[in-house]
Image: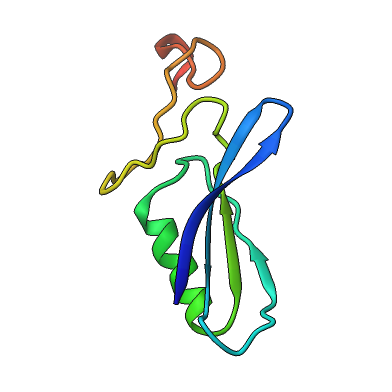
Length: 96
């Protein structure tokens, strides 16, 4: 298996992307794998590797590149956003 990270230029700066595909037997169909709300983490890389092991070229872009280019290896929750009133949580008085 071949895997690497590369950068894609965007108007907001370079977006890093994880790419994995089988060594032989190409061309390979492409899977564009979007991250979930928790962001980049090792579990997603593992899923990409599993897809590549059955013949796909998998691209995992860091959709949060404007905030961070880092992975959070071993993190159970991946990327953690700061809490902001009214955006990421409701004030405790509104919870029922």
